[in-house]
Amino acid sequence: MDDGAKWRQIEKWVADLDAAAYAEVAESVGARDGKQGWDPRPEQTLRNSDVDWFVWFLRAGRGSGKTRSAAEWVREEIEEFGPIRVALVAQTFADGRDVMVEGESGLLAVLPERLMPFGKDFHWNRSIGELKLGDGSYLKVHTSEKPGGLRGPQWNRAWADEIAEFKDADLGLQADTTWFNLVAGLRLEGAKVMITGTPKPVALVKAIVERCASQPTWIETRMSTVDNLVNLSAVFKAEVVDMYEGTRLGRQELEGELLEGLGDFFDTSLLVPAHTIPKGRRFRARCWDLASTEKTQDNPDPDWTVGTLVSVDPVKRLYCIEHVARFRARSGARNDRILATALRDNLAYHGGVKVFVEQEGGSGGKAQIEEIARHLDGVTRVTGARPTGKKADRAQPVAGSIEQGRVSVLMPTLTDEADPTSGLEWDFQAMTSELTEFREDEKHAHDDIVDTLSCFWANSPKRPPPDYSIAPISITK
Image: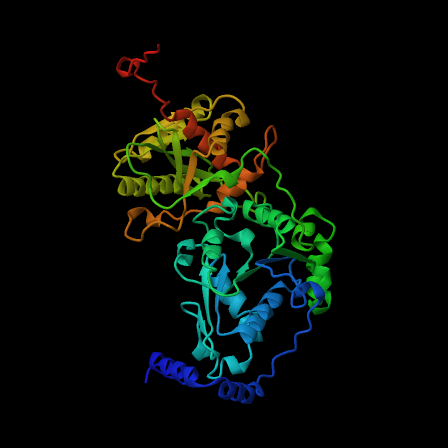
């Protein structure tokens, strides 16, 4: 008999037990549990709260015990209200599996054996992230890499971990994001979601903190690393806590403070998520900002070579950021990567992508453009684009378009597997982080993506003027 047949047989057997029989079996199995006791600090539990809450944000520093707190909360909910359905949502599948379920403070470490009478290997399918418990409760790992996977399923409870690291955290509470699809699925009895994480100044975290301050059913508790020092290793205390305590980074990562980002130029929460390539007549181009350096001991954080693919409907002035290629390489390998990207664009868009390369001044800049043009000869035409004016002035049209809600972003992992663009994986957070940190009249560690966006806005077709010769005549009396 295979595992699937065994599981169906066990499910039927459990379903046929009456309450008294199930309690007797649970008690006999529970005697073998031997799980470590749970004696939470006041901020680690809401068991004594008289608030009928919907969202609980446990905002905490590194090593403060937030994972154990959430795992124990899930256990308590299952034991009191089970069988229930629980969504486990993480940044990546590996995070959900390795931390939330299999981690030292994860679910497998706290769930009693009476809920897994046939052993964790039987109940836990780590390849697909499914945990089926003996009482009929069902837990499933979902990720921000595929927010569409949260469409359809319904849940009684949810645990969302490290929401600041979600791939679409910079889009806030918008529709079709990981967060929206999660809460839209909390449609079953007693729906609640617990959030755990170290805060960062991204749109999703800021929006949730604001709601916790204004909505009675949204609760926030705070924990710091210091609160849990007794359970942390001496090495961690010496090498991590002592190094960062009292610093800005320490206030965020150890004390769980929500610190505002350095920039206020771009509002990334106004970017509109897109899940399909825009249709219709559009001008499409990839704009490159070149660098020719790799990491070295003397230069551990060199500039990036960035090529941003953007399209626009020139009439409606609706923009879509469709892909960002971002890498570090010396000139020879860099040119090969640019060629490979051009070939990929041609395949995905049937040759309809123009190429602009930001051109430095003087003969050196001209020679660099000619070098790239020779490398891409026969594939696509390369046009040099020489920037003029201050960097912030060039970026103003981009920021204005975002503020007006006219800029969408093709989400990296949401393209159809049958679509040739599905291989165009890119680091969405690198873009939003750079936009968030960009500030007027200041030097930035990296602003290459901003430069490529400015390049596109400067070189895309202008909106055509109306044709008054065919406009209807207005007659007033």
